[in-house]
Length: 401
Image (cartoon, rainbow, N blue to C red; front, side, top):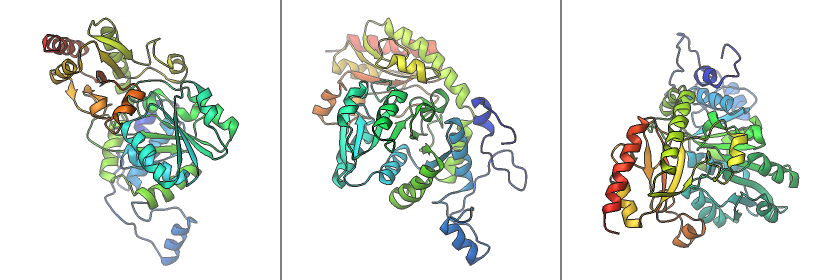
């Protein structure tokens, strides 16, 4: 970047751009699996880490590195490494910083695949996984032990939209042991609305598929932290364990999408506020979860650590489960699909879709009810989004119970 800027508007466009010999304005796509060395000695120095430069795209690529530099800047962090998916990012962090006998303490509200990785897979390798509600730090304190090496949570959470207090949780963990890695999934907020490292977190993970890319056409993940931790995550978790390497062509698309992150997030948030106001007055809707509502768990934390309240929400209907399915099946402007953060508005049923990895007992325990619906409020005309809900809800209300 030619100039120093503290503006995310400017950073999202100019940070990390690679200039080639032709003066390309946009970072080129380096579609190469391997890179030439000038000599055997140079190759040896690069493999030993004594000299910078590229070796093999699984270890780094100019296109993916340009994107990583931009995300690191937007997250107020030293470094970032890109991965092939959000789960690739999470798994790479786990395999880098956890070992047999370690304790991982995780929040009780997690994305379904994250929950499955923690409770069904890590435990098979002798990692002690403990789940509790992070909205009360006393729950965390009770589980902290000398073998605790990681504390992990989302904020806002999926699908309850609970906001966890990053500063308080990080302080609690670090006061017990400064070496505990506090890991935050920042997917729902994006780097534009929230920067966990600025509030005490050690590592941030993203499913960049969502707001970072913003166009529902690429699967991508990111790990953000210090240069030292990112070097470890790259050379251990990513290189040796998961191999979840982002393709340079995909990195190009994400970099393009990231250029509009600030203006997209502003409009997402604007639409969300109006839509939540509509939901709050709708007779068929109850128990709305949205960080901007005073009734939301962690609303005060959201005001402290988020620039705005985002565009994710969940709610329950006053309808039966069968009627709720009729409602979801009859939206027309909204799209029935999982994922989030794209320009289009999405609606999904967590219990049978994103959180289907939970058993019936676990769904009940963590309050993921049969009539809970999660929405990602997009950039369409807000009045048309509201009208679409109205017609679908009326159809559902008249259907058999």
